[in-house]
Figure 1 (cartoon, rainbow, N blue to C red):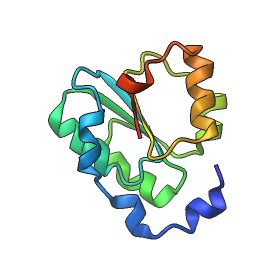
Figure 2: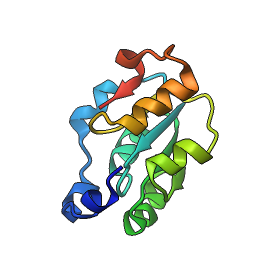
Figure 3: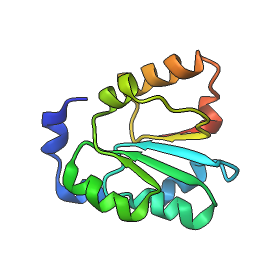
Figure 4: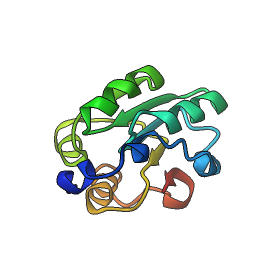
Length: 123
């Protein structure tokens, strides 16, 4: 993740709900993780639709702090650090706006190419 470019984004980028992405999240998901969750607005929206545990990863501390209100768990760190240092299991859905190498590596590392991208990955 290019943290410098990420930090240059407008504050409005971190608070968008993106309700149009809702249909890409499985309605049977029990545990969801979102990389770059901002203030957790999308997770809050999803949690209003389905009963699930929603975890976020957000490197911008001011938005991670806001996400604590909306999500079940928040990790204030970069995607790369999270992938390398935090063990997670039983994820039903991934949410990330845009595909990137760290996310690809995460999916490959933990699911050994057995992950159903069309059914389980929202972007």
